[in-house]
Image 1 (cartoon, rainbow, N blue to C red):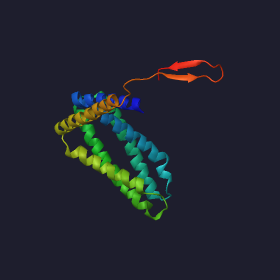
Image 2: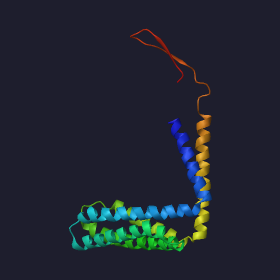
Image 3: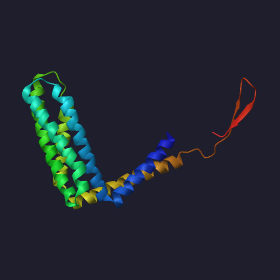
Image 4: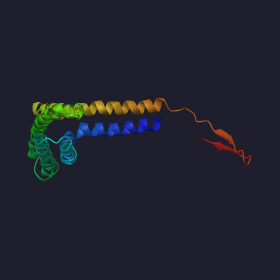
Length: 193
């Protein structure tokens, strides 16, 4: 467990440094990760969620949401890699629109599931989180977003440093050798663990 603290501290420190010194790369990574999530969500909607309830309007709303998710996911993954910096900003707003439209379709689907025995709590959470993420993307301009990413990087770097300090302070000072008697051969073995 103590080795995990050191590893986690180093990884958090590395991520924090990237967030501080390369915030635009973090924004790009977030756009691509949101695109991958949208793509996976769309495939999941088409393969599984659509079959939850046999109502035709429910299935159409899930079908539309799934196809919309796949298209936006592909655009978010590949379009910004091909075009200039402005495409990143455009993709952020497209993702915000996708999150709002997808959550509206999801709320509609949840309403259709009201009379069924299908559990809706996870769907409600997904819709609420989508709306919150969309509002954050729309409200926070890119300049403020870059500043917030740098501040988040400072916090994550601090947490990483705290993990490393915790590891260093709680490691054993001196490792005493252990003597073990082998029952079969009668030999005395020494270990430095």
